[in-house]
Length: 316
Image (tube, rainbow, N blue to C red; front, side):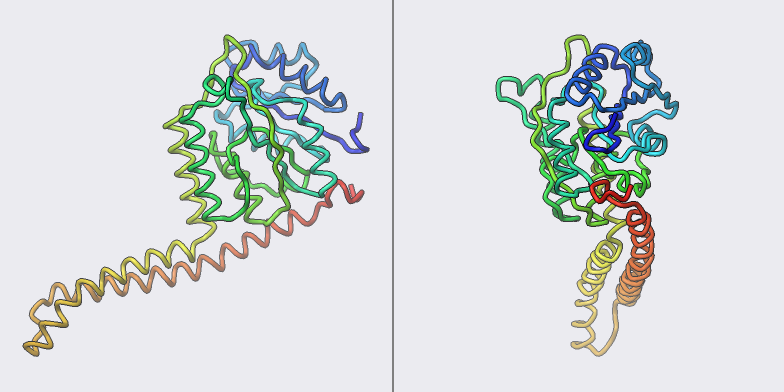
């Protein structure tokens, strides 16, 4: 079955979601009967895989732990025209899938993110204030560094074109994968969009796998790592500026002493200042070299991206 003459697949990463996966499969099948449904079971200790098979989904086991590992396998094994990814916890509104897929096709986008919107009366159970604050803080950091207009960078409900998933070199292992997905689109300047999606509480008897502080730290660390990897000239120039400023600051007393006495009385300070200025120049040089390396890597990813036509073009 095809939706608007295109193959559309649903990929659901799962870890111990026995209590929710049946509802996810049924809701999405009702919302879009044309979906090919794949459940990626990440070493679940319960009956997640059995329940998914009983509902008619294709189950693929992923032995390497972590959502990032699941997404890497997902993008490698599933090859539709359009891929829908959603968490297996039944918190996202399935009915929004048609609107998200239509937006991707009609506006010729490569990624559509389901921006979470939670009713106030359901807010404490569905979307805790700490998670909201962390999401806003991390999303703002990415917007400031990489640009873009995303309001919910950490959403687990997304729609991708085939050329997005086949040009994405996933490196993350855990929940920081959403950050990498967003930055990949921003770095290649892919056309992307958002659709507000109702976000509800988990079904009774299930529990979240997200650790607020541990996973928040990992996401922040990923942002810093990607900033260094994708913006080396900016990062190393900032380092050079700080080191050079410190070098000049500690050299000022040496200059004043020399002007008064005609002697360099603080040789250790002068040597340290000169050494720090050399380090600043080396830092700037590293930034310039790595910037050229990054440009080459981005061009390679861009060529892989351009090698596959957008599904709306009819070139598939």
